[in-house]
Structures are given as C-alpha cells and as structure tokens.
Amino acid sequence: MNNIDNIQIVMVNTSHPGNIGAAARVMKNMYLHTLSLVDPVCYPHANATAMASGADDVLATANVYADLPSALHASHLVIATSARNRRLSIPCLTPQACAKKLYTEAQNGTVSLLFGRERTGLTNEELGYCHYLVEIPANPAYRSLNIASAIQIMSYEIMQVYLQAQDMAEQVKRENKEVLASGEDIERFYQHLEQVLIKIQFLYPERSPQLIRRLRRLFNRIHLEQNEVNILRGILTAIEKQ
Ligand code: SAH
Image: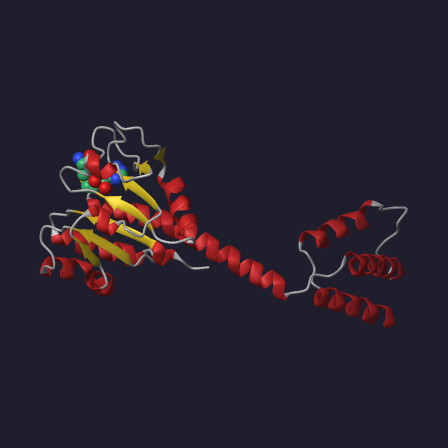
C-alpha cells in the first residue's frame, strides 16, 4: 500500500520561482513527488531549477494549470493551508490530523493540499473548493511562514504517517511469515522446563513457588515462535542427558 503519490501539493499563483524549487526539494526529501502549479507568476525559471537542487525530477513532472478548478479536477479531498484560520466555517485541522486524513484518503485516489500566494494567501473563492483548513501553529505575533517552509512542515507530517503505515505493513508481513508457537506447545515447554529445573536442583517448588510464574511471564513477553520453542526444548533435553 503506497499511494503517497496520490497526494498532490498545489501551489497557487506563486510569485517567486525560487520558492517553487525549494518546495520541490523539501517534498522529495519527505517522499512526496506530485507537485501542481496553478498560474505560477514566473515559471519555468532558472531560480526554480537552482533551488530544486537534486529534486529537478519533481519540477520536471510538475503539472502547470491555468486555474484552480483544473488542478483539482481529480481530487476527492481538498485541504487548504492558511496562516490565519480566520473567517469562513470550514472545519480546521491540526497538521497531524491533516496528514492522517490526506494519507488515508490517498488510498482511494487523488487528494490535494493547497498553498497560497506569498503575500496574500488564498482568496475566499479558492477556499470555497476546500473541505478543511489547516494552520501550522506559530508565534501569534508572526504566524506567516515562508511557503516552502510551510510545505516542508506539512510534508514532514505526511511522511510520518506514511512511514508508520510502511512499518505496520512490514510488521504484518513478518508476523505472517513466522509461525508463533501454539499455546499447547508453550505449555509443554513450561512443564519440561519445570521438570528440568527440579532435576538439576535449581527449583524447589515448595521453597520458591514464584519462580516458575516469573519464568512464564518472561517467555510470554517475547511471543515465542515454533522453532524457538523447539530449540529451547532441545536444550532442556540435552541438559537432561547430562
Ligand atoms: N498572509 C498570508 C500568508 C501567506 S504565506 C496568509 O494569511 O495566508 C504563503 C502560504 O504559506 C500561505 O498561503 C499558506 O499556504 C502557507 N503558510 C504560511 N504560514 C502558514 C501557517 N502558519 N500555517 C499554514 N500555512 C501557512
């Protein structure tokens, strides 16, 4: 499950080409590749390429649209970023909740995260296309981040959700591959362990009734696999032979 490319970063009417390049760079750093530019003021431009550094592929594949509706044509979820969560009755999300929603919905198709103009942000009309608003918490006396910095922070949050999902998928794959020991086999191992510990005079059940319980707790904590139980049983048998 890797539909992170369904997450589209949309920069609306960006003035400085350097900001577009910087955005491409931070996106690629965070595993994002889908960039759309709506009516960029100055693009393509050498400053965009220079600021993109090793992320020119993100620039090369960026879509350029004349207007916002064209950029959003395939999106079933649109979230706007804003330095002021002001006006309008659009529900507001934290950056973390926004990242989770985008990643989850990206499994079903294209989703968009919008960034506004450097000086004036997004217009009310543009916000009208959005289902949610997200504000990155910042100093109330100076909330407005550079657009590429805002993209960096949001991309980082999306990456966290993405990596967590990858990690969980890996874990499930691993767990499916390794056969955990059955309760019955583990019970037989505990009995075998107890017998051997008594035989080698390590355990005196009447003197230390806690010990076996403690050992059970220890082994239960690590979820023994079938072949690990076999190894432990083999060790116990070898001890008995001595
Ligand atoms: N005065 C403008 C600031 C524009 S900054 C405004 O109020 O929106 C350029 C863009 O960067 C913004 O449109 C937004 O997309 C993003 N941005 C800047 N600071 C942000 C913040 N604290 N939270 C969310 N997005 C922010």
